[in-house]
Amino acid sequence: KDNWRAKAKNLPAEDLDTDLSKAFRRAVLEDAELYAALKEGCERFARYRDYSRIPWEDSELRYDLIGKLRSKLASVCLSALKPGLVILDEFQRFKHLLDGDDEASMLATALFEHPDVRVLLLSATPYKMFTLDQENDEDDHYPDFIRTLNFLFNDSGKVDEVKSLLSEHRTTLHACAKGSVCHPGKKAELERALLNVMCRTERVATTRDHNSMLTEIERTAPLTPADLQHAATVDAVAICVKAGEPIEYWKSAPYLINFLKHYELRHKLDAQLNAPSDALRGTLSSANGQLLTKGKFEGYQALDPANPRMRVLFEDTIDKGMWQLLWMPPSMPYIEPGGAYQDKDGLTKALVFSSWSAVPDAIASICSYEAERKMIAGTSVSHSELYDKIKPLLRFAVASNDNRLTGMPVIAWLLPSPTLATKIDPLEIALGRGSGPLDVQELRDEVKAICRSLVETLPDAGEGTRADERWYWAAPILLDSHNGLLDWCKSHSGWRSATPDHESGTRFKDHIDLLVSMAEGNIPLGPQPDDLVDVLCDLALAGPGVCALRALHRIGAGLDAADPNLLSAAARIASGFRSL
Image 1 (cartoon, helix red, strand yellow):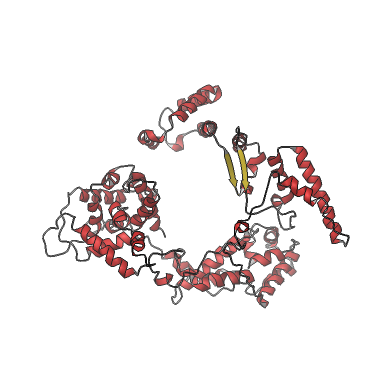
Image 2: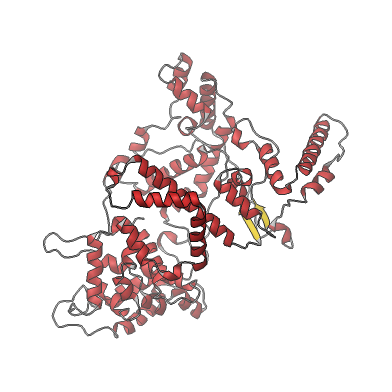
């Protein structure tokens, strides 16, 4: 309750739409039943109570009231819209909105039926005119297609006409298959009817030579004897438990017994494991190497892809060194890629389509395991030890011996410095040279020259014989002490609120308080380290906070780099790098 009051009090007035606020208040007052429920809720929650002491009846009323208020607000906001075109991309995911009777469907219907509105349904996965035995009832394509036509035509007569034409066309196709003379039948008439509400567009059709700069690379997926053994085993298990034909699953994923968790075959197998038949026991006992076991993973044993398609996926990704990369190589680099990214400019993402839910599980599990296995090659670490040894890194901690805040270098690493983000832009430097990607050292030399001039604007260094390492985290905030960054650091709605909840404890706030105190000149500094310029160069080129702010500022529609919203967004992005 206190948290809600604080957030409501600090909510900027400019973030609220005055007309919508008035319309929502009026709509609640005009709904006598809702207004009465709101008054009752206020009376029941007039005083603060611990969550565990709130009666179930009061909680039920509260959540019901919240739901009704949200629904009322959605209706009010919907009435304020004046859409000319409503687009549903991949509309099959929202098919329940087309003819449903729940609140979401009713809101969608009100939007679709808005005066002068047009509705466009988009999908890259056209309907198929048949449904396979392996597909469940929810994937019955023909009824889905008819439901969509009912929505598009909004005329049952026209839908019945299309259904009749489809039936006649089907009869014609069957006659052709039986050797009869094949006539076009109702094909042209069917096309004309459907073109009233749908069309198929191909980007390739707009190109001069119809290739759209694409090259089709045909890949063969070699079949091994071991693959056939897997097929024979899963087929034998299906026969033993009286499940359907598993061949289509086998074509798409390996180790089916492990990955078909939500399929009929696995359900029937699980039901018989406590009292298996002799045939089933014998089949599973002879399935050497065809089941995934804990022992294989624990010792990081090499794992056979066990599927032709999975083997090709291995070749195109893991075998090309993609397991070494945190993210994809840049398509237009302005710095010469090095390290693991050297000579990786031909890599691209692989988009895998499949109708079976077992396929994503199999790909994620087996490919991730193989990548992990390569990463720990040459060590004696077991699978369980690898996860046991994970320790938190880059923490905002306090030294036990002298109460010194040890996370200040991390603060500098995450700080979204407007000065470093705007004064130093490697993209602009590369474009200014106009000679393609820059050599890393060449770029660093130019950036260090800029950093050297920035260091000269910093306050004078103190006296002493030993370099003060606090300059490493103090320099960035001192460069920005007069451009709004300091106010953002001090504000409760600034950096403190832009960090995840698990990082918003006392120690993080203590680090921010120390940073602010340094920026305000309350902490004297000793001599600057000789490599301060090098550290600033590293932060400018690779600091997550600086890089995030620079990227957001490029597309920030004229926003100042020190805009609090940009700073908070950059801080959230930078914080994500700590959990990589």
